[in-house]
Amino acid sequence: MIRFIRGAVVALTSSLMLAAAPAAVAQAPYPGKPIRLVVPFSAGSATDILARIIGTKMGEGGTYQVIVDNRPGAGGTLGATGVAKAAPDGYTLILVSVGHAINATLYPRLAYDTVKDFAPVSLVATVPNVLVVNAGSKYKSVRDLVTAARAAPGTLNFDSAGSGSSTHLSGEMFRMQAGIDIVHIPYKGTGEALTDVMAGRGDMMFAPTVSAMPFVRQGKLRALAVTTARRSSSLPDIPTVAESGLPGYAFDSWFGILAPAGTPKEIIDTLNAEIGKALAAPDVRERLAAQGAEPKRSSPQEFASYIQAEIGKLAPVIRQSGAIAGQ
Figure 1 (tube, helix red, strand yellow):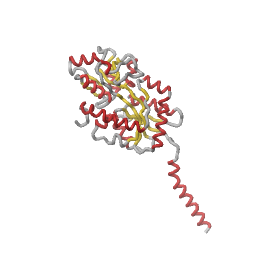
Figure 2 (cartoon, helix red, strand yellow):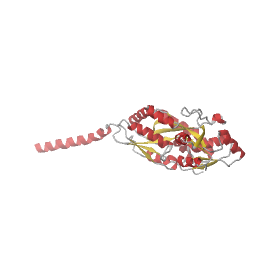
Figure 3 (spheres, rainbow, N blue to C red):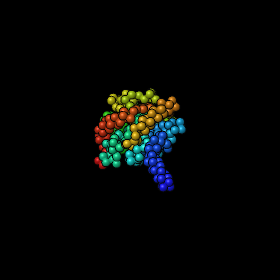
Figure 4 (cartoon, one colour):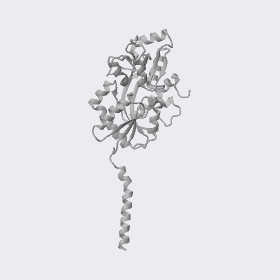
């Protein structure tokens, strides 16, 4: 009898321990392992540069270990598809660009829902695109380009990081508002497109400042104008496209971090606070400014509303550009 009771007590204790195990796991402090930050573009892209600056800063305290994972392809949709299907546990994130909002219209049959399948964490930065030409180009201003394009329609071209990218749509807005005929040359990424502009094979490009400004400073590219409505505080000497002859022209590039839908609110809030600390650090602000980027933290709710507004604003431009997949 004693042996039976002892065995029953042991069995009951084991059952209670097993029952309590999930609760113990659920209450484990976050983060308990490295966080994978997916970059849906190639190494050296504006998104990649920003991810590494922020990820490195988050890792300095020892609590967070952020591993940047480049998953380029299909205009950023390949990486986004993987994150949309990842476990909503806070260990898989994605740093998206304005292209995330563009793709909602550009690709009618995405493998994910741009809004419903993600949990916004925070905006990270805004980065103007900058209109650049080869350093030896005869074009020294926006007016020079517009005048040349009007004199010889279809002879000038503009490179982009790919059809439907922010670098493409910046050029399309320029073409439409200036009323000129310039030819779009899509590449597989920003780096390849800039290389051809520097080599003189491309006439111009609306490139992210993060990617273009190092080459401007090296004397390989000439910056003519930024695409934002106001001059960039980090590039105060470069005029806007609007003040260079196209009033009303404005195109903003932005970057932000998303998690899979269903990620617990406590984890989202924890990540938001940590990203905010990283963006507030003087050395991070200095590094972002050097790239022409401005830190732009937001609440998760503000970022969600911002994405919705951007989808609506950009849809008409995308449709007019003729870039929609399958059309």
